[in-house]
Length: 189
Image (cartoon, rainbow, N blue to C red; front, side):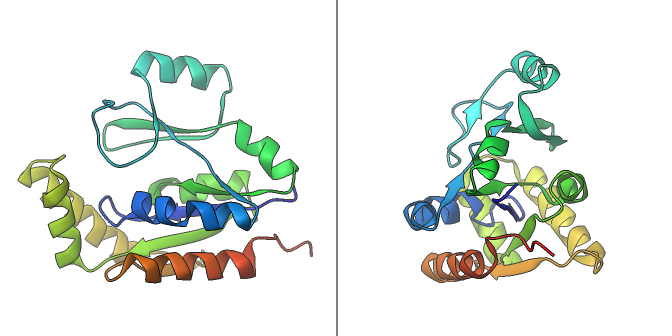
């Protein structure tokens, strides 16, 4: 494949969806598409431009081989449509809203994948989670605890590019676009 998967990860509330939306037009100019995830959650969820399906529909699509990548997290199922592989063969890079827990599996399928971790200070993350109103206080605390565990366990054997999204979103967009300009074409060595 001539394109490259840009695998954007980060805790819920770090601003992955906001970053992708703010960068979408510039990404297109760079020959980089954004893949919409398929998720088993309510269509009322605010934020991500995802394809919402029932659990049964997700399982049908998974069994039919309609996903390039699929994983489960936080009681939900996520899938990246198999259309991604065609775009990669056409030489287009793709941005995927991925999962930290699924990174190793994604690297097995796409060894030239570019892992990007969106970070945010804990106090800012807590405030964002409260503001979006999707989770209870108990669920927010559980998310923050999982994020702390991930920070402690971050493996040094997989190089991950970090983008800080604590401050101005435009700064994070600039960092993402610079990273893609330098790294969008996989090494052919």
